[in-house]
Length: 194
Length: 194
DNA sequence: TTAATTTCTTCAACTACTTTAATTTTTTAG
DNA sequence: CTAAAAAATTAAAGTAGTTGAAGAAATTAA
Image (cartoon, rainbow over all chains, first blue to last red; front, side, top):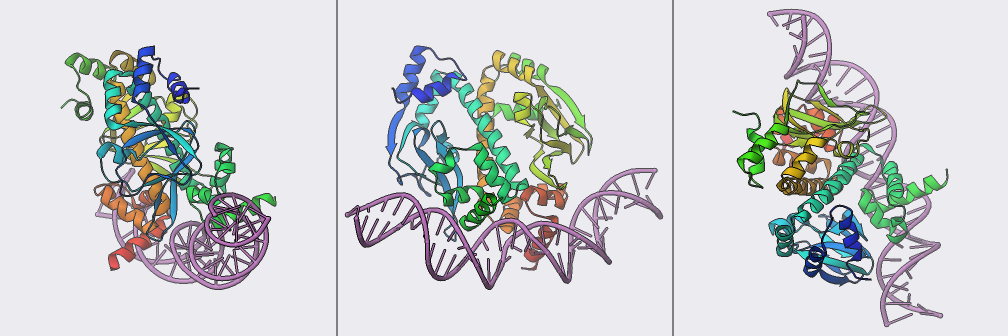
């Protein structure tokens, strides 16, 4: 199987491409493996790529003054990750991205992306829909962080990403949900006793 | 001044339009006034429009089981508001949108938007950039809701939207920042005493 | 396989923030 | 301009979630 199979499937859901457009697109992609614990981006770096995950799992996070980790997103197969702001403006990133499992990525640099928009404008549509959906998901998450208790956030996480909990250490789940690992452990006990 | 002046300026920052494209676009817009306290959307409604604010101020919020208001976003001049998920899927909305001041809007329905994408595909680019920027802003807000204290969130709000605090009741600011109005009042006192 | 490291759990002390309720100030409406 | 309603302040009691510390369990590495 071609390593861009998954990505092409995702694209085909939203736009139709001619074979030559597929070939051009594929020629722009750069394949990269990221072993577990390796960094894709560190605070202070400039984010040079948009990254599509074809296998594995990454987290994107910040570290505060007291050394705590706060996870802004997990990325698994079929997701895009990058610090978009740094990527688009060339500014230094506040974020870290590293691999929680051995991971395989397809990368697009900014110049390549711009070439792509120019040569195949249909990709404007593809990314418009991609960001539109990402925006909706984030708006929902913001709403829940305002209106849900820690327990509700955890239960919703289980429902929304049923497979993810097995793959990710519990303390990372806590750092994603905005609670301490100790409290998440307590929550889980309380829930299991019902 | 034409009532679509502001919107056309925003668009011109990202794409170039021919006069006939401008005219076609303008012909799709529907002007609407929303008096203070009037609803643009209620929970249970289907969101039928994307709304560009040319004057005034709105809030988008949910109400939880205990009757509390949680504000997901404010919108002022130059911002788009809608429940995108409901708008795109036709599902019932969880959100309320109402006006905090007398407000004027330009509205686009889904059919009109689809016509627009078809006749002037450059708008794919415009909305791609719009959602891309909105995504970045939201990602930042999620990160801050995870890693900032209530005080840091308030100070950042003041810095990011210096003009907004004058226009919006303090309790709404609290509902936006994810703290109780009582606590925000305490915070402000503490800060002013330094 | 074992040692080393990381993660998870449990408990108790603590704190950032909420809740309730009473008073004052500001805004709105007639 | 005045009355009524809404918003902001203050104080006190309460609670959801944190912190720190110590042991148990699981994972990693050699």
